[in-house]
Image 1 (cartoon, rainbow, N blue to C red):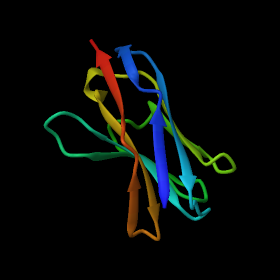
Image 2 (image 1 turned 180 degrees about the vertical axis):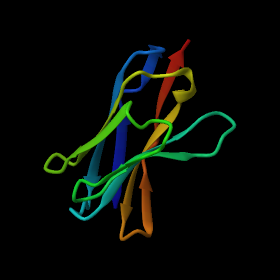
Image 3 (image 1 turned 45 degrees about the vertical axis):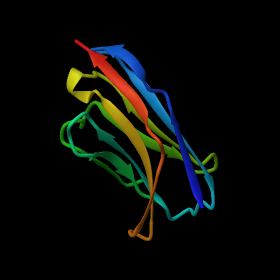
Image 4 (image 1 turned 90 degrees about the vertical axis):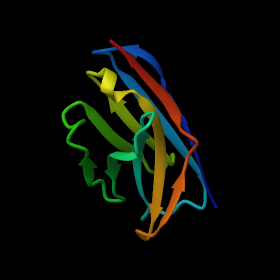
Length: 116
């Protein structure tokens, strides 16, 4: 099994920055893809960014140029650097690990609140 634990959320003013971390433990494969999703109150969960095992990244249009996803494979840690935060970035952010493009593991989430 896989366990994912997020940290780094909090309250920040618009224009500020936060860095989210996700530590993965258990049976982690080097081929696993990882990513960040978020869910705002009353909205569906959406992809923020993901990163493949080889380092290929993909971002939602709403965060391009402001967020950077990265991973430290030896440490089984995923990061999301969030800059120029906006109130609309307020959400619970979830770490995701996807295996063989079919099996998803999720963390419990970390709350980010951006005040205007």
